Amino acid sequence: MATTGGSSSTAPLLDGLPPTSPRRIAGGATWAQTLGNIVVSIVGTGVLGLPYAFRMAGWLAGTLGVAVAGASTFFCMLLLIQCRDRLEEHDDEEISDQVHIQSYGDLGAKVFGTAGRYLTELLVLTSQAGSAVAYLVFIGQNLSSLFTKTNQSLVSPTIFIFFLLLPLEIILSFIRSLSSIAPFSAFADACNVLAMAIVIKEEIQMFNRFSWERSAFNGTWGLPFAGGVAVFCFDGFSMTLPLEASMADKRKFRRVLLVAFMAITTVYISFGIFGYLAYGDETKDIITLNLPNDWSAIAVKVGLCIALAFTFPIILHPIYEIIEMKLASSGWSQKFCCNAHGERLGLHGARMLVLLIITTVASCIPGFGAFISLVGSTVSAMLAFVLPATFHLLLMGSKLKLWQRAVDYLILLVGIAFAGYGTYDALSHHFMGS
Image 1 (cartoon, one colour):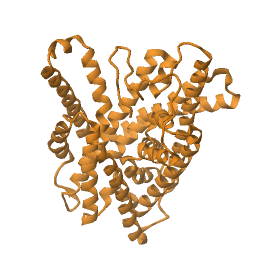
Image 2: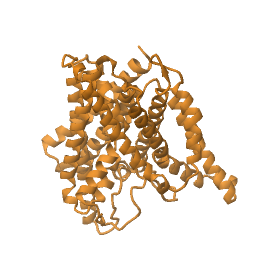
Image 3: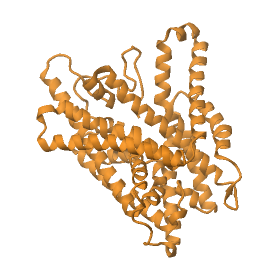
Image 4: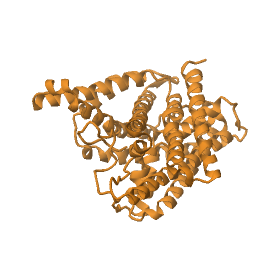
């Protein structure tokens, strides 16, 4: 996610890049570096919840859901780029008031003004907060699984969230430089890949348990759940424009993006299918919880949890910066923080309050799978489908052909329906237990 910047009251919540000239400056990333950056920005802990989503929907329904989510997200990313190109072409025709579109929020501002910027970036930050909560739930459940007896957990995940993670994250919140924490992000990605590899190894060893008689479709109630998980797994939509801007040869970006999405979708589908075929109805909402507590599985769980815990401040960084920007511009804050000591105290207090709220929410989440499905069905669906289609319709206008308008309206309507129905399904059938 991009971070905030600027001190004026009209500064955006999220600045994609530092202010530059109206003309976009070419980045220096090669196609291989861009491909790696796309994969890193999309693939996260959500992938370890895919086998459970396939269990809920059925292996064929889950496959179709992931494929449709991947194709739709890819297409809507291209819509964003078209909108940005259209705006910059229009600005080139105007000698004055040229604007460089740097971020998702800039597009929202061009379409709906200040309200559009704040709406877009509020959704981005809500998605970021949802990812942070999912991190804590994931870590808490994996650590809890290390202390089991006869398949019963001896320590609640809430204990780890409040008495281990909260103090650790409060200490890490005092670190102002993200460069000190950034190496843990690469470590987390490596552990994520290693966890998938160990799960696949276990599944191969359990080949005799594979059953192609597993359900292909598990009823209509499983479809929105799996769809929400799939959309969550393709999250990273707000990085579209910064990723494209970072590439030296931007003409190759669409091709690189296509290759990345094809590879990610193939891995997601394969991982989801084989996990469900191996464990069937015993598949848990985090597939690592199905692993035996041998040395290799324990090492991966602990390594993954440590890496995610130290990466957590990066996830919260955009939220911290927004709050700090608002505090700096508020009158009561300026009176309270009359010196450097008071300012530091106020900023650290705000960060601790954010951490307390997020850990409290995480402790109330009944399950990892249900939560990421809810996030995917709501804010992720709005960011990935509803807003891009709306922006494209309003910005491109008469330049669109009839079939293009029809596709945009289809994405818009289906996105709204999916968000509404998916939210209802996640809340009523997975959170309320009805």
